Image: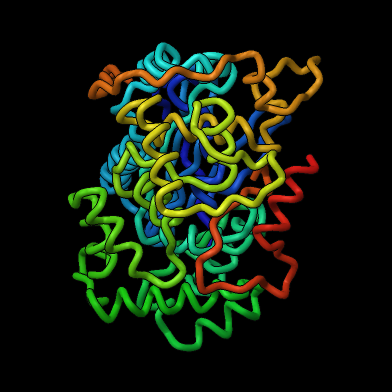
Length: 409
């Protein structure tokens, strides 16, 4: 199904508030595709239930348009839908939060963050669909960003009919499948055949638990299933209450649950912790304990997890999860040369931190960022292995092997 390409609309938005090149490639969402328009211009695309969002960016402006499948909406309908797209953009990127204010506050509290703020600008937390976010991070266990992306794309292609395609392109765009589709018993075997390994059963059983407990019916004017609405309602729960519900699902441990809390359920203070984050907390933020460089494997106990989370919350304040995402992105191998002049040699991203003294833990005042003006892996990422999982036969590394690989880098 092909479409006519509409013109882009513009939203004044500087890079200090949003960098698409960083935010959409740092391991938060795994469904954005990229198209190279020119050597210096990239278009980012995401397929929603009823439209494909297309984004481009200049240093001062975000350009956006939405493409709709047949039958093409009337001019009046298009205007209404384009207004919906703008509302979605503001919500998805949480543009009511002034990121520049947050960066200044984090830099004032943390000399480690201050060293990198000018280079890694515009990195904010997305406000994703909780259902998609949950399944994506079940896929993330003992995995890397590139492979997670391929798995999530394969999931959509297998279980969602194509919504549309672009003129002159072979690629079709598929929405994310609903829980009722992934709850079918045959899903496990199909996903295993697609290379999902043990995660295949986790996905099917989690979808089945949701459908069995909360239903799959949806109203004619609302394509969201009842179980999806229940997940969305966790935004109104406390952090502990929402985490408790998420931990009931198969393949969801503390790290995966905390990723969902931070990236789709509005729990801005939550810092997802893995071995790598523990190493950062030990090296730069005064957390006592054996660092990964000691040669000993770290046992990520619930107490140690809480200690890391609490320490980083004390350093960064109420938006600690957002600050953590900047540090996490800075240490991705794919961002080794990000923000550097083209003539500068690429260096390890966290080398910029070597000159910074360990951060002092400051009191944590409530953080109330002002709003914007109305006019406007390490690519081999260490992600948690669920307690009941076993290594894949399709090329995954065990957690211990990944720790050893990181030590050799």
